[in-house]
Amino acid sequence: MPNETVQEITLLGATWKPRLPASFVIREEILLTAGQDTEHGGRALGAALGVTWGHPKVALKASYSRSGFDPRAYGGDIWDELRGLGCSIGELAEQGNRAMTAIAFSIPKQEAVEERVGFSDPATSSTDEADGVPAGLS
Image (spheres, rainbow, N blue to C red):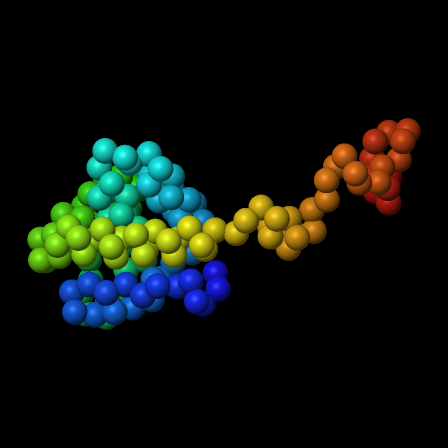
């Protein structure tokens, strides 16, 4: 993600750059939750805040694993915890959107994955016509 797209998160008197989870599975689960969570959008935003949390003095009690690795349950736990700490709905929505944006920009596009790994389209790659095995591997 280009540095200029990283928006800092500010909550509870501190500001930090979102810390992205190492797991792409977790990142993608959070993004999918955002698309599915139209009735309770706070859950997806809470999950995004939780997995990118970097407050220097406030450690969150909710955990992804204790929430059964369920992004909606985890997001609800985070949202409740942050509301209990005094965050307004507006603050959580704004900062949650920043966290969600950071997650979205951290997912590599398919073209970047293919370029990095050196994939080629099987329809255009060279093969031995006799057995369909890629040239050089037969």
